[in-house]
Amino acid sequence: MAHTRTQDAMMSLFRCAKLDPSLSAFVRSVHFSDHLVSDEYKLFEVEPELADELSGPGSPRTIELKDEPGKSGFGRVFACATDQTYSVVETETSNTLLLIPDGSVLLEKPRELEEPKPAVVHAMKTSYLELQPCIAPSLRLLKQKLLSSEYHGPFEDECDDCDENSAIHSRSSKFTRSELGVELPCSKNELCYAFARLRVFEIEGFMRIVDPDYLVEVIRDIFSCADEHAWDWRQQGFSVRSLVENLQKQYSTTILNQVIGLYFYPRNVTPSCSSLTDLIVFPINSRICQLIGEQLLSVTNSFDLNDFKAVWKATVPSGLRPKLRKQLTCAGRAYCGTPGSSNTNRTDHRHPLFRTISLLRSEDLPDDTIELRLQALFERCSAWPELELASFLTDLVIPPDTTCKHYSDPVMGPLMFPCSINDSDFEYSDEIESEFPESTASDSDSPKQASAAVVTILNRLCRATTTTDQGRIYTQKYGNT
Image (tube, rainbow, N blue to C red; front, side, top):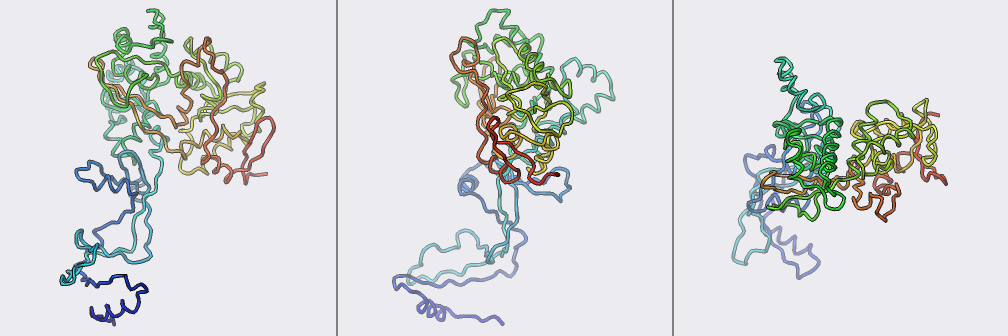
């Protein structure tokens, strides 16, 4: 049977228990409501900064709970804020937590003559929900969802519209931005970043992956337009209005705006600005060369490395310089091997005789766990140099930069330039000044070092050996012998 103590008995107990006479003590009664509503509350532990933003007066920020796609309510739960996604994990508390209405908790000792009102407990909880930051959305899942509605150009869409059955099927396979935002567990900023990663454009209200062949065609016409009008784009850049004015008969303004936003960048533009003057943009060497390299590799299973480098160099627009390691093999976009069995040891990357290169995008690999991705990579090749292997894990480990620069042009409308500086797809955005023959900058093809977080994971899950010519090489830790 529970024993009820009086207030005087509790005060006597405090006087005996306290070690420092200066410590004050007071007793407050606790009453339990006759109708506890414990099941109606969920407790979340959040970071102080996020808590301040959510609880601030007039704060527009909210957290939206979403379940895992395709799991019918039995998968994981995600909490999506504006720019971050969290995996929700239920954790038990060491003590029972009493939920008391706001304003009824005493923070200071009451006055001598003032008798504190009893605190009324409305609910009790023995567990809470912990928010663990995660990287979302799944690029692989998003790509699979949008691949059936890939955009190849306006001519193909017009042919589909002529066939009634094709038009109905085409609409059912397309998704709007809001539909994807509801279905995918991720924040709005992360979804915009994923669109940039997968080259997803908003076309006639629907989000669609754009065929690389069509993107390359648009970019070639942009550079052809510059050559036709003798624009010194290396020094003066491209005038956005002039580009649209000259190409609007070939491409819609919507397509041109999004191509410019993804493959060109403005100088001296604040994160959000509007100006009556024309916007000048410069090409991003690494993104354009990477796009063309992937397009060349997509037409065949494997390409002789020497032949590929020659064709790639001849195919990119004049003035741009492709770099194999920075833009493809150490950026999670392709891998090099030797003819014959795919599961073979690697040869020295500095001696590419008899080597081949194949397209391998990181978003096409399993992304459920890092272990599954590593397994898929080692099935293709038994030994990987550190920089190449790390590039395929970056998008699972390193949170991307989801910020964008927005520019409002009174003639062109809104333009958005994704930053994406931490993403494996756009990791090596070389400054355009260092990409031309007249530049004094080094023309080396040395990628940045792998992230410490990724290297730590590789050392834990793989077997590492160090060689004098290739540096650190990773193999399966528990592979078949």
